[in-house]
Image (cartoon, rainbow, N blue to C red):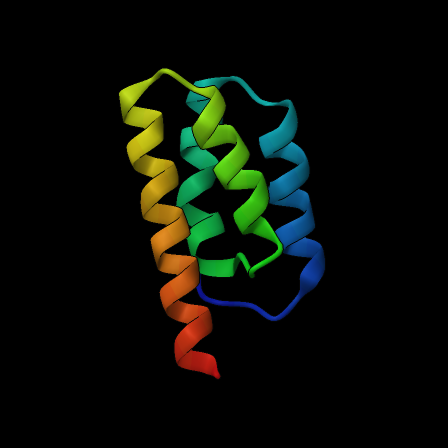
Amino acid sequence: MSNTNDPEVEDIFLNEFGISDKHMKGTICGPLSTVGTLKSIPILKEAHKKTRDGGLRMLIENAIDKIETRTKSCH
């Protein structure tokens, strides 16, 4: 998925992330890392704190890093 400026796409992913099981959360991290904005960071960090699943923690950390890197390079 390419980057998009459509905020609805990020909202859809964040809504799904909030109601999904850990497997789906991991799946959502990939596209969210390319379309997510700073709005996604607190939600991802909260999920990171709550999960004990090492694989999901790694996927969340990766998504946070990519979002932060991408948003810093845009400014």
